[in-house]
Length: 383
Image (cartoon, rainbow, N blue to C red; front, top):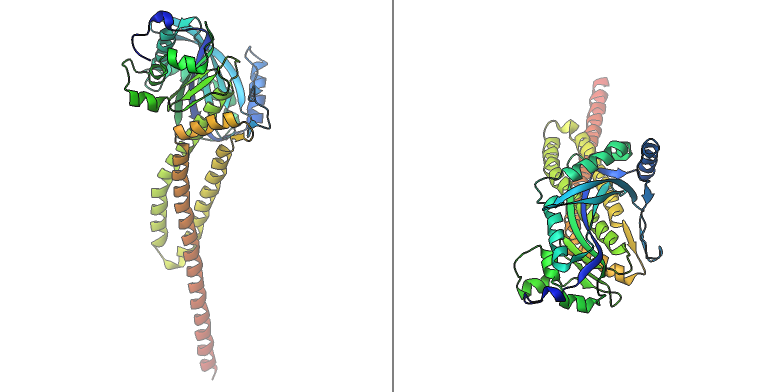
């Protein structure tokens, strides 16, 4: 789209909204049944929304389904200051069993011509995005959730890892364009990049290459930190799938950082086990190997739970969107890094077990030789 397109040719968003996401790792896992009961007990004493298990709204369960449906909790709305405008945003928290909480802020964006829709998206990013000066709206919502559901967290995280994402959703325009017509009439690159200046053709092509349509009047375009969804039927499945992919990225980044910190400690423990008396070395090796085996088993179990967060079987369209989101977020490369570090730890505890077994065999041989010597000496002494 060129700069000389008249504003009169630009469509107006009749119904739409913006979704600002912040995903936070809070624990190794979350007992969702316990969390649901805790929230129900709390809502019985004061007005608040009911918790419910989240499911994809427009997709058959046998086609695409959550491995374990997350628990969705409505929170108190917040007032956002967007430039000179104050607007109320609905807030929802979704709890995933693998230890992630997704906070979602839904900002109304209907009744805006396209440039105003773009400006509002940038304003939301400036107010609550990763570069925002103040993130108190996220912190207060997260404290509210953890304050009520803290007992449901299993192995609370010591370090906080988070991810942010922004989605622009349009359900209808003043004139209902097809996806192809919409691409011609609006500058999606400006919306998805957040840039005020015109991008080069190469940059625009790269930014818009992950685009999908199922019907002629719907459209999904994905980038690293923003997405655009044009969905006249009001389905939210694509947004849910994008959220799950972000949650998987965040969890894999958490385990990657965890193992980054663990590897130097492992090397120090190995050096310490090799020092000191040979008599105790095998016991040190065996103890360290057991600890490393426990770490590998724990991380492997949790990463498998993350990998199985969404099960895609028959819905080819959502499968393509999901696979593209995982590719865009580079989940596979982070997962590969986690697996490489797990392999190093596995090789280390295998070597430690072998050294411990060798040390025990050596001491057994020494003991046998010592017993033989004692027998010989006693036999000579008797004679």
